[in-house]
Image 1 (cartoon, rainbow, N blue to C red):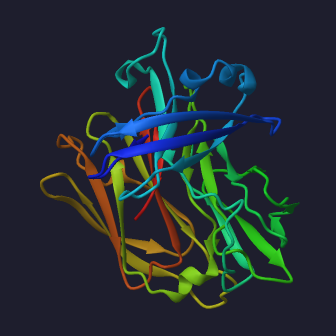
Image 2 (image 1 turned 180 degrees about the horizontal axis):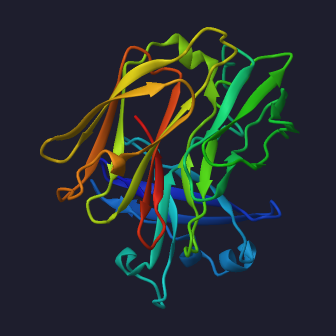
Length: 313
């Protein structure tokens, strides 16, 4: 899904769809996008070969677009299920998961980070795993005990609220080694994906004093959890501290608490909130003297369907 700006755009789009065997299917299409219009691309509608090519397994797509002007070229992307045939409206989806696209680091030249050490951090999830997207590199990189193969989709077996070292041998890590936390939800066909990146030591060099994020959507009931993953990066000093947690409704401050941090921490926000919640969206803010070594996420567990994970901003 792509949102346009003030210009009328003539777009040439190529989809390169990779299946579980890393076989490629190329689909081309042309679009006219009116000013401030929205383009929704459903690959299976562009070629009868897409479903056969995927064979019921997971797939990934590279999107090449000529003709963009005046807009930020990231897009929403995701999956849906529907019992309605033919499908014509997202409002008819029985399940939906989406995230944002990432830039193609399988071809982009990028500078190194400032050190050889980083982390893949997994927040609170019902079940799941991690992935690292394809990155073109000649470096020898270890993800935990496993070697990363250049330009490959790497699978990470990892538990909820855990951390795995990502380390380059005899060099520094790439500055962008893009990863994602994948969640599996009870009773749901679709997995959710939260693009996380790899936490690199460079982040510790830039002081950070606050983070914010979505805690609970406005239309669903369920439990909300905040995950704080601490990245020590070979520091031997005491890294414990207290930070401030505030939770807001759309109209007012609901919670203000000091949170003590001395390692990874999982905060069940429902233990802090009033029993009767106000209508609408809830947001959280974390602030303090030192937040740059914390990877922060929120996970929403609805009562009887798939939830979501989102990183803080």
